[in-house]
Image 1: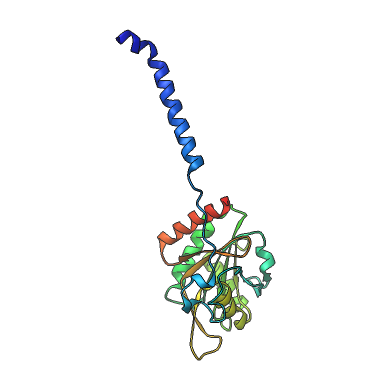
Image 2: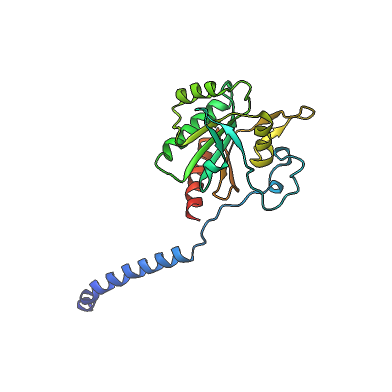
Length: 220
């Protein structure tokens, strides 16, 4: 009996290895592929959505825009065409959540440095303070890579409408037209200008989740 098992031991090991490989391949093939949701205004907490859009359940995309970056260059949706990007809202004189958010944007910039498919976009909510020169000073202080990350200023009404009506990332201030409270949210936007995720820009775990979701989005 021992002689019999010794004789076929090699074939048994080979058969076992092949079985493991086949089962692993089948699992990978049959495992559902993770796909990120496409967020619509109707999916989001009402306080983050302009009242004119709270009923919208499909086809929501980021609107066209025309703003100015830290180098005085005009930045539009065309600069983000066929790109995945992460957007947020901040201001350079903020002493609370903005420094943490900016540090996490710097981390994203470092992690995605060689990834030509992904860009970053930060909008100031105090354009009357954050001039091009002020944004440039801030960019140099934080080590912003101009090829990867635009800090933009411009018309206050347009920026606020983008925050409320496109990115769904700010709370309205009642009875004060074109005033808002920006959130800590980072917003993941796909190549079709659709919102695919929201992340707490002050939370390191959410930054890791964002990086994972960018990889999933690239694989779609």
